[in-house]
Image (cartoon, rainbow, N blue to C red; front, side, top):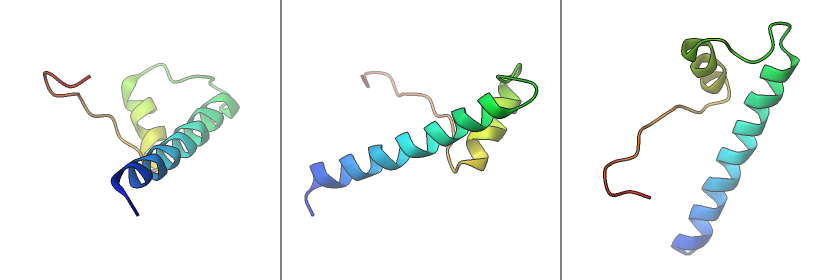
Length: 58
């Protein structure tokens, strides 16, 4: 498998996990998270995390 195909698969996996986290947030009786900690917890449950881009990354 080439690098491009591998990156596409990784992006699709991230997209699926993020969509799940957002669906879960939408189903919450509290609605969207009111704090970053809550949002990070929902992402963590979906196997995702927040990271910062390095300078020069686009």
